[in-house]
Length: 457
Image (cartoon, rainbow, N blue to C red):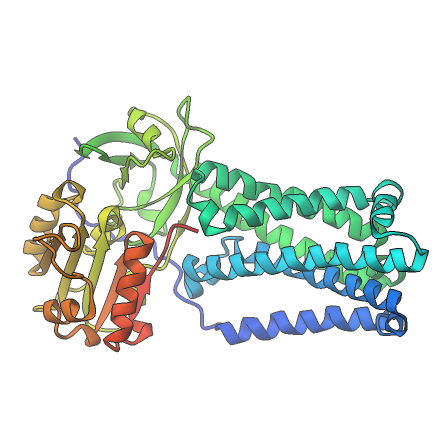
């Protein structure tokens, strides 16, 4: 059995960059203004002289801005290390989500406005003009198919829908966004004003597409290939932790060179007969030690149950590491960790790396029942060794065990009186995290001291 390995120093993970949101916003807005400036240079304002021209010109502008935002959206999810270290996947996912909705509305606006403008200019009905565009204009049918794919991606990202589909389905739908972009680029290349009349604009747009593609190929393809060729990961052992939770121990070559920290996660793909096509994000549940990686999985019926059929020797492909829920984000000497259910996994690993001054390391573990508590004995032993404290907040709210909100402001202050002078690391179900974040804000804990990542986008 793989036991508790001595701690070893792993390769240094990237440190957060000094580039901030304002810097990126300036760059993004500057390029957006350049796009608008090119539209003006190509006669966009002149088109506003007539009603039909106004619709057509606005359709051109929404297409240009929508296309530009598509590229920004891809860059946000290109897994660029310095972006992730600065903003975290939580922040990038939020931005990606809202930029994506903006893209859909802009591109839908392009189709509607352009069709209306052309219909008025040709003096025919809007439906008739739409049919003419689809059947006679180059690449319009292709662009329409791309638009339908963008809408499908957007619909799958709505929270009400996202919660009803499996991770594999959601991820597969999102892959179609690349096809949608390829279709849109063909349309833009064939009939776009910037491409047909201005060589400099053509060079600019092609450079944007090429730069975006290179970033994706480097960090979404090249980096994972290099990581997996170097370390050649395999399943060493599968250990059942409880009735519906198990841990997978993964070994490989030169793990001490893997630039991962406690609190981070990988996207894992197990090359078993029925699971090679599935990829899931799982946090490390033990600090990296140079000998093995441990992930812990709860059977949730979304593909995670396939992990239960793994056997030793199964090849493993990973992407990452990702995440900023690490000691590098700490600003205070003391720390508070708040976990919910299986959200204990990254915090369990982080407990090994955080400093433990007297009364300065505390874990609050929220669970609906004792059956949902993972690593109970392991946590007790680890916290005792480190001179830290753990509070199990077990039971359903309103029950005799938990009559009031155990993560409410009053409860938090009673358990951790110096919470305002601590860094707080938080992981668990989204509703629990949102409630805890609200409590921390009500207590006046500075946002710079609160570190949380959601894995449900």
